[in-house]
Length: 90
Image 1 (cartoon, rainbow, N blue to C red):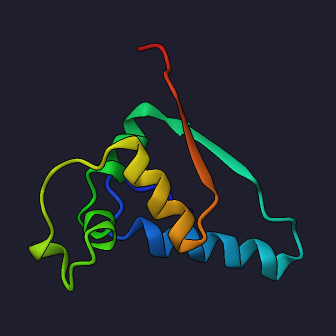
Image 2 (cartoon, rainbow, N blue to C red; image 1 turned 120 degrees about the vertical axis):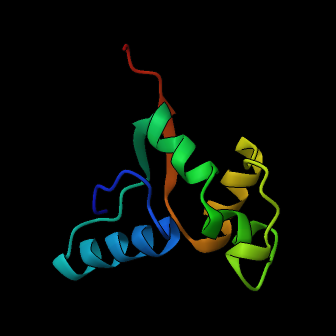
């Protein structure tokens, strides 16, 4: 996945990353670790909120941050590998 500060569409990015690995013949990872900060970008992302709330547009989705269970449900529903978070020291 391309490293960006605030992904515009992390669902598309994650699916593209998985496709890239498949095209290389690499096994699909079962789990990916990310920082707490990066995880919060996903949980606050408009495209992710729109997908979980079935909104036709990110601009019409509720603005609340996704709870961990909602984000996990989104990952499973989209076929995205599990994205785990770790706290990193400052």
